[in-house]
Image 1 (spheres, helix red, strand yellow):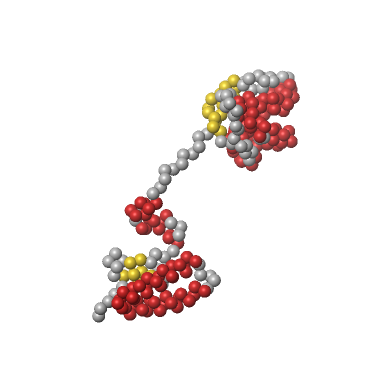
Image 2 (cartoon, rainbow, N blue to C red):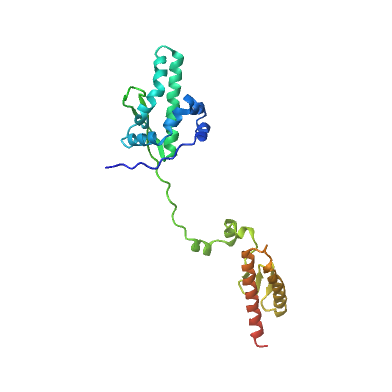
Length: 241
């Protein structure tokens, strides 16, 4: 069956330097060619192909790494200092591979497996990777049910809108009072004189709707408050004396 590789995302060199500071200088090793070779779509696809077979990712790119390591490995046969450098380069390669694989949705398994000697024995054992599981999507949240049962102060704390504005216009539970958010005051619903005064204030404020600095939200609240005050006054004037 034909295997489709995930889209390649290059690893961020700056993040690698920060996370693997011991190997930060290797980003520029050999004029940056080693990092560029590992952090490429070609190398990634080959690492994924070997990963899908349960083999170390590095096994897919040993032929890419060989030209970078062959000279230093030859010198290491007779020079202990070159041997230490060759070992450090290999550790840097492993860290670079991890950076590329993790940037593309893979993670370490904690398992080491033998690396096939192709074209020669470049690595003995190396890390095996696997696809990292996708994050679980949270359960759907019933917003209506929550708001119906939650204390209002909690809703205000959680709401960027309500937490930074006045209380919304509302009646008291016995509907004896009406709080007018636009004016930040309340009126007794049975006091026609106070309702009339509030209406005059609202109409004066209503004219400010032409002010370009007035937000659409405030204008909408003013409309609601004006209509509600007019409805209260209408109920009072229609009541028998």
